Image 1 (spheres, rainbow, N blue to C red):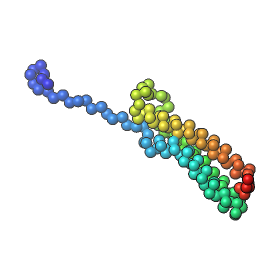
Image 2 (image 1 turned 45 degrees about the vertical axis):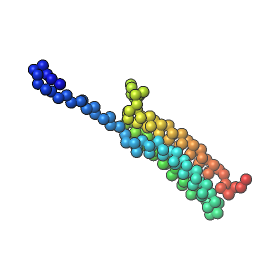
Image 3 (image 1 turned 45 degrees about the horizontal axis):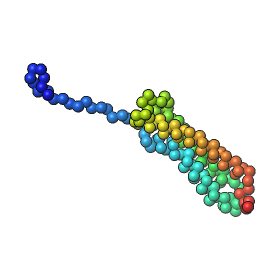
Image 4 (image 1 turned 180 degrees about the vertical axis):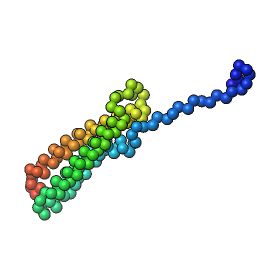
Length: 138
């Protein structure tokens, strides 16, 4: 490109800074998947430990599994809540355009909602451990 005085000027393209996500992908997905993973583990371990509980008496192992699963879900929900705070709770003006900010807010909000849902489900699963006999056969 030539200037008005006839000198040659180089034009450099403007570098657009890359958008940096407010929360790492690992933290987002850890918070979102903690509840479903804890639910799956709780359900499977209860099935595995019921025969042992029936043979040895006492339900302490089933209660321990339930408490650990609930604690894991609560920790994942708290992590998702923190991720949502870091990403910002206000919905961006241009959310339809996507980007890492909108994605972070969506996955963090999804993690909070799923965590709350799975927490309620696991509390409901814990009730029969208190009431029903593990040795009962239909």
